[in-house]
Length: 463
Image 1: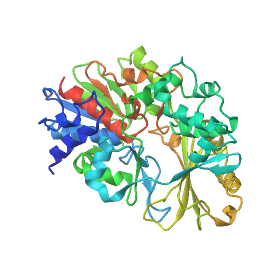
Image 2 (image 1 turned 180 degrees about the vertical axis):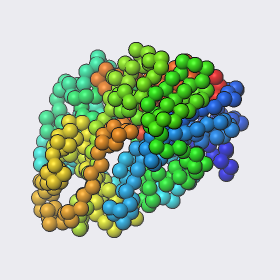
Image 3 (image 1 turned 45 degrees about the vertical axis):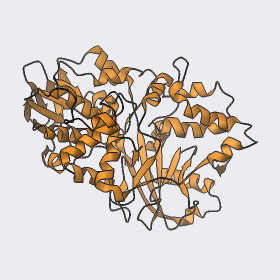
Image 4 (image 1 turned 90 degrees about the vertical axis):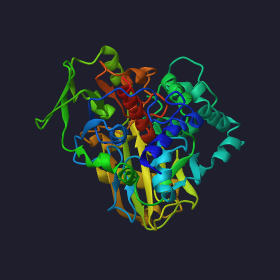
């Protein structure tokens, strides 16, 4: 398959509204619908998934571009660590969410033998015991309240009420308070925050538009970033590293970009793919200043504080079919890091967001690990947790990354409608891309970042 044909096929995974449905789009000769008029130069800021994919699309049209990256490596929030275990562990993005996305199509083409759907079992902590979803739905002890919770989870995209937090919304229903930690894990923590900070209208906006599918795929061998290295070698070879952008001046005919090292870049158009955390911190100054609407979007869209903590054990103490352990008081979700993968080692990943992450960050590393081991020992009192812990751990705090400052965006209390403002181009010169500016419900995902790049490139080429 020719690369141009492959990229055309990838577009079929985009949600309706970005491109024609698959059976029509496959008849088109071009990736970008509409007449391509642009002949100038594009500067891409950021070499994560959004930036690299934008470069690959521009490459297809022989558009002159440069791509600059603040750090010394590409990948952004896709990063693996090979020294901790016998296979790479994913410090950032870890799963492919759904089979109807540009990312799934990419993986299916370049790494079909390396991806596998997660078909294992989630266990939920209820009343100090680990239970299945079936138990929570059908338990006489819960008198239908477990079923109510899961029905609510399935109906978030059709929420009919006024704006409030998820926590407030849950109190309107007869749901056992012992299920609240599970609800926080499945909503707030999953979105990179907690239920007190997730707004129902912004959540409805995301859930109603989400279209890539409910499946979850993981790499059984290799790493996430290896997929991008295989697919986008040319674009990656052109990245200019260690160029932290500090000012963007779009007042003239060309856009002028200055970096902390003193370098100056000029282009007709800019695609800005830096994480939302960088914009929130004001690390880049704009001339003219961004509009009040744009700044409001930056301020109101949430940006998560997430810890991923990896613990290695000498042998397994969890059930063999375990995918995740959900609903802990300190750690909303643990998952079996190497489940279904080509590994002989036993590793758990603790995934902690929001206030719980902030609490752990205030502790010493030793106290963090002791807290997790203590909780796991409570979850598996006869599992020999303490004796099986090898003493090996790894903590990844994405908020400590100077050019990222967090994990991914979440539906903040007052952020409904704000992503459209964030994604809107400025003066037909400055274009925003990345998961936070995704307007199709795929926020916080790699394929959402790629979709936003497709939109930005489409706007530039047809402008």
